[in-house]
Amino acid sequence: MNQHLELAVSTVVFALRPHPDAERPTLWLPLVRRIREPFRGRWALPGGPLEDHHDLAASARETLKATTGLEPRHLEQLYAFGDVDRSPQTDHRVVSIVYWALVRPDEDADAHHGQNVRWFPADETLARHEDGTAPLAFDHGVILRYAVQRLRAKITYSPIAHAFLPEEFPLTRLREVYEAILGRDLDPSNFRRQVLAQGSVESTGRRMTGTHHRPPVLYRSAPNRSRYTLTIEENP
Amino acid sequence: MNQHLELAVSTVVFALRPHPDAERPTLWLPLVRRIREPFRGRWALPGGPLEDHHDLAASARETLKATTGLEPRHLEQLYAFGDVDRSPQTDHRVVSIVYWALVRPDEDADAHHGQNVRWFPADETLARHEDGTAPLAFDHGVILRYAVQRLRAKITYSPIAHAFLPEEFPLTRLREVYEAILGRDLDPSNFRRQVLAQGSVESTGRRMTGTHHRPPVLYRSAPNRSRYTLTIEENP
View 1 (cartoon, rainbow over the protein chains, first blue to last red):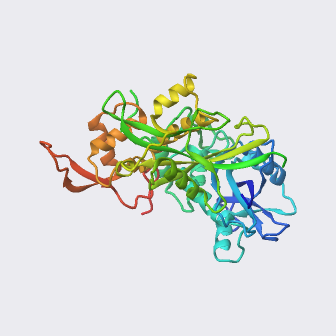
View 2: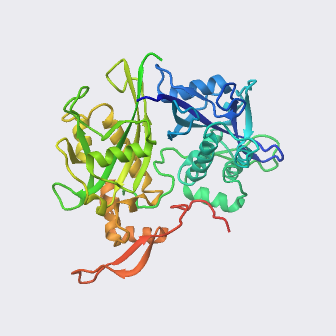
């Protein structure tokens, strides 16, 4: 092999924070400003070269902690990106193994901001990448688009949306997670009916404390569900 | 970095062929006998180092064609395996990006067998790996186990089972694919009812030709389904 091959590990980190123009929760992600060529000055996903003594996920965790202060429990591999021409340096090929992390509110409280680290709403970042106003470095726009699409698909067949919530939550909070990820409003009573029919949450028997006139019931993830949606018969 | 880092692309290729002891279809995969250390003489997944001029999927396709003669349309990335100690050579680290290919019967007809390439039933291969009778090279037993589990999960939320079938098929054939992947029998009338309710197949309006007394209706994949199972409300 004549080309220098580098293996990098990067992470798309999603947290739900209030939309900048409205109260409703929306997807945000942290980006890191590149201080070197190529793409100096552009924003990029947090990441770095795979180090000798690190497994892949450990490498993702290390970078995340260093750049954002976050140690999210929900971290999983998303996809490996390795097209021949994804780095502009022709003598240098970078294959990136990309993880994604979903941040719970209690974890997000630990996030810190560095000089070259900033959080952005995901939809705005994609829009500004795609209209050319603020293109991301490398193929990170493609990666972000892929991550958003995977998240949208995956909430329909897995309880992954729960990763954005504390252990116990009212159903309204779960609906807001779905609305933030899907980018549209859902009918509250239909949503409640469908989620309860599906069996992915169970009541804790307790209600929220606070100033509510009628405090809502708290739910939690139902344990030991090997499948989220049941489309074929189960073992008897 | 002091370690030599190698990037490999390997593929788990699944085809449905008759079970060795019975008529029913079962999952088979091709393995390649290693002719060099480490793990000389053991069976391994087809694969090889990523070459300079190849994208990741192109590298998987190239190895597959060279070792098995197969050019399956259904090829997708499965997972990247990169634990620090997955190769026994301490000065040498291999990160493998693993694809999986699902082979249709017409594609499988082109499979050739080389001296060091052989097809095995997947369940028997895993059993003989796990009881130590015939361990696979490297962590390829772990990879194969992961691929079988992912396939079992994915047939419940995507039409991926159709990748094992020709364009048009009777529902019995589709049930046999599910049975082969799940490793258990399904009730024929329940299966028919559930698949038709789900809407992932549509009738062609034609029947199989041949010697059947009552030739079964042929179905095909229903087009343009963005979701396989519907668990939340659709846009109006």
